[in-house]
Structures are given as structure tokens and as C-alpha cells.
Length: 215
Image 1: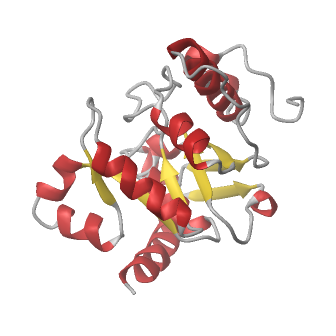
Image 2: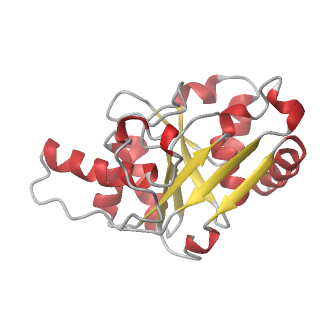
């Protein structure tokens, strides 16, 4: 109930204060396990994905959020689950795998944290490792413009933001599981996300091709 009401509220509020544009909804599978992997430029990104994608998404959220009054209640009500950033959190990984085994959708931000410059940072291994271990497809998403929403004076002009949803894909199998193999898989994922972003958002993945040209 809370999840659905929160998403309805988010859609109404975002329509009032901004001009959202959502592209590629036809790429979202209607059923089956899935990892939604997106860049992260604003605290709004999880509710934006939850509000506009037609699947119920379970997000990982840093454990510190659950300890903040009211915020922690809202995050838990949104069905997020805690993860300890910067360390191997086996409990969070197991929770994520269970979500995927149930045929549900897991939302992740492969950079591991919000980008303060709104440009892509080096991807971390978590999302790629989960996709490989669980053998599930990834839905890449590129978010641009949310960093301007609720920021003065931008809010006076209803700033636009865009969510580009790419085709689902599976990571190439990893032969040895070495660090180099894992980070090749990470780069596969991050380049897919970069291809869905305007060039100025691509950061360390600036050599990515536009989504219309990506294979």
C-alpha cells in the first residue's frame, strides 16, 4: 500500500514541479527476475524509477538511511533493504539474490553512490556480480536532469528531466572470475548506461556510443 501511494504521490508532485520525459517503457519486461541498473545523480532517482517503471522495484539503500527518523520509516515502507557500503555485505547480497529468485525486480545504482558532478563514475562490482551469479537480465537506465528538480531557482521554470530505458541484456559469461574478468563485465554494464545518457553525463565512460548506435 505504502509503495503504491508513494509512487502515485511522486508522479503527481513531479508533474507539478517538473517536466518528465520517459523513453523506452516498451523495453521493460512484464514479468520475470530483473536488475534495473541506472546512474545516480540525485536523491530523487529511486522514487523516479519506482514511479514510472511498470514493475515493482526493490532497492538497496545505505544502512545509514534506516537510522534517520521519518526517513528510515519511509525507506523501509518503500520496501528497500539495507546495505553496508564499502564492505562485503553478505546479508544484503543474499537478500538481493532472494528477490531475484522470487522473480522480482531489484533496483541498483552500479556506481555505488550518488555522483556529485552528475557525470558517470567508475562502476563497482556489485550489480554485475549479482547479475552473473543469479543469471538474470539487466535493464539499463540513463537518468538526466533530476539534479535540477527542487533546486532554486530552477523549480520556478519546471525543469525537465529524462529517463531513457534501454533494451534488456545479459552480461557475457565470466570464465575465471578474476578481478579483470569482473571489471570487464562492469564495463559492459556501465557502457550500456552511458549510451543512454547525453554526452555531458557520461563521465569516465565518455567514449560510449549513443544508444541509437549501440549494438
